[in-house]
Image 1 (cartoon, rainbow, N blue to C red):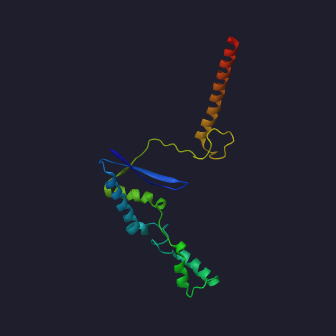
Image 2 (cartoon, rainbow, N blue to C red):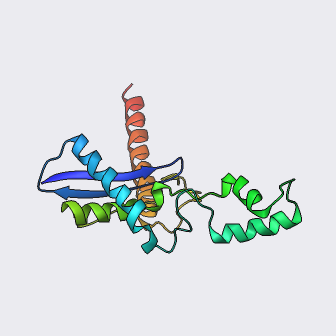
Length: 174
């Protein structure tokens, strides 16, 4: 059994899916499967997903309506509504990988017989909170981190007491 992972990362988040397969693939083979699965989604399966607002490089109907209103208010010197809308490239839709990585993994499972790794147990805790800070603000509902924090301070207190006791005993011996 061989393990594979696909995912994405940004400055603030990431997402990964682990798969396994009975065959071992080279990096090049795996990359080619990934590319094919991504293109399969982008070219042939995207219409199944209602949350994708437009074709690649197109302006969604919703944004076009909004731009039509803007054209009437201030067309910035454009002669036609169509030219104004076409000039607004920042409204063109392009799929980002964080939106489709789960679907790409699904395609890889279907096309190449990958399987999803199923974990017996998983632990996820809030990543920004300071673990043992008594006044931490992040992840207040995170019971595991709260337990760690509580146990840390209990054990630290005992450790400090032992260290103080050793120091006292050393001073008495002198």
